[in-house]
Image 1: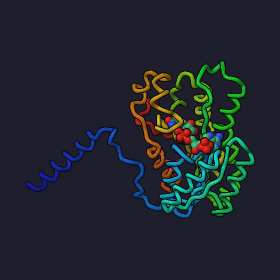
Image 2: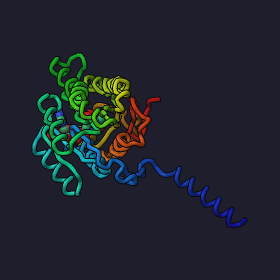
Image 3: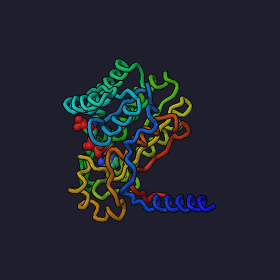
Length: 283
Ligand SMILES: NC(=O)c1ccc[n+]([C@@H]2O[C@H](COP(=O)([O-])OP(=O)(O)OC[C@H]3O[C@@H](n4cnc5c(N)ncnc54)[C@H](OP(=O)(O)O)[C@@H]3O)[C@@H](O)[C@H]2O)c1
């Protein structure tokens, strides 16, 4: 009886300690407890030579997938491939500016040539060329942002679709942003493109469900990468950012959820927009 009470007290204390663990001590998403959940699968990832895309590439490869990394600059591709191959991971790469049809074709061809098919597409590449008024944006800026951020995932997927269909199942992950829900002033065109991705995710999920292809959206908060240059730009763009978001994330903290969404553990999940932002004000 005494030892049962002690055990109960110990479990209660343990539970309390767990609930008091600060968010800043949250678990690293580098864990690979579900080792080789993606074994023998093939993943194509755009914008994956640094930042969030690179972390996703590393994670999917660690979880057993063959990974094709890509971005606009050859030296970035070479560096990323060398780094990941140096870790013993099955990775190749090619240059792919997602806004260019011929580059997208080369990306598809590279995957087929090296690994014989494609199971997963993760669309990470995104741009924001403008800090300024939405209505002051030129047509050129609108075209560039919508081409790269919104149109290119759909166009690349249309090129990959026959090959994904051949596999009988597949998973697509788009990368949106919390600005889709909480727009940052002066980033109106970018905010709009990221909101459009939430809609694209829903439409594609319905369209591709009969083919066994799931489509979900990763919605990161503020992640410490070159893209955001967090410390320098955010306090100016969004003085209250700390009240809204609270925490900055690491690229690796976006990677585990993408691996999960690609895996068969997520077989009943499609059309979802999943926030990885420390905290989310959306319901
Ligand atoms: N960082 C954040 O706080 C945050 C938050 C929410 C959402 N996001 C989204 O996450 C994605 C990645 O951002 P990140 O922070 O990881 O950026 P990052 O560290 O600057 O990395 C961007 C990557 O994309 C490549 N890239 C850029 N333009 C491209 C294009 N047109 N075609 C193909 N590849 C291209 C870059 O390589 P090259 O220069 O060689 O092309 C690089 O590999 C973006 O879609 C962004 O909107 C970021």
